[in-house]
Length: 322
Image 1 (cartoon, one colour):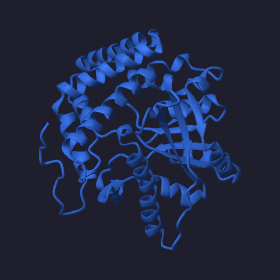
Image 2 (cartoon, helix red, strand yellow; image 1 turned 60 degrees about the horizontal axis):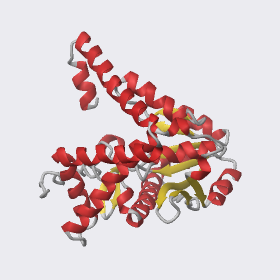
Image 3 (cartoon, one colour; image 1 turned 90 degrees about the vertical axis):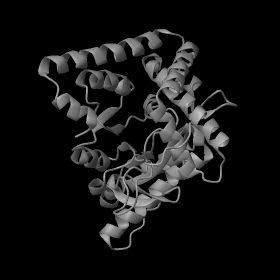
Image 4 (cartoon, helix red, strand yellow; image 1 turned 30 degrees about the vertical axis):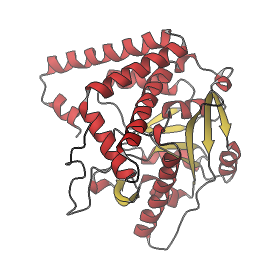
């Protein structure tokens, strides 16, 4: 149970219902107001919200700086702070673009997004075993699958449902407006297998920390990180192509590039447990390589190395300077 779920469980029913509606009202108002604005203004407002949150919530800064210290020990603190500031701007861009999703369609999406490596996706589809879209909380990740569907390639997206059911329904309407469908991360295995057997595409964000009994440890920036074995398990079972894909903001073009890399070749040793571990490791390496190329695109405010191998100390116990 998440912290927010636990708090809701201990809240009296009437107060809990009021809280749900208040939260929904805030999120609905924010998305609708930003959605009414021209895109440029929505992005500026999103940037301002993210900047204020980063400035007034010390925990966000501490986690971001600590993560950057762990990932890039060779960089000095001013360099890490510049990356953190740009990553904060990226979150503002995410909020602004998400509010604008209802305005996008198959006729205008090309003005905002273009393909880079679409041939890799098409080749993966032609194999006929389905495609597992390997990605993470990178760039404007909500726009990547949305744009892909508008270009004619709808897919299923595995998500963690938001605890507030009204907010979840609202966000889901935005996410699925382009023809995609969402699958609940909890209990979605059967639906994913069905989609892959039909040759469909399933997108999974695979870069977040997992609790010890649900993940496997593999290196991420040279540090053991508890990672989801879901992609490896599904790929080994179905032989679906695992295709790294990321949405990258291209300043020169003034638009996003939906970048696909060649499908990763599955490693099969004959030992099922080892196969899951080594393939999860190569999937995490693919995400790491993209983050190293565009460090300001990633979600540094998430405690990626929170879960530690047995006996290892908490990497976030040390407080770094703001």
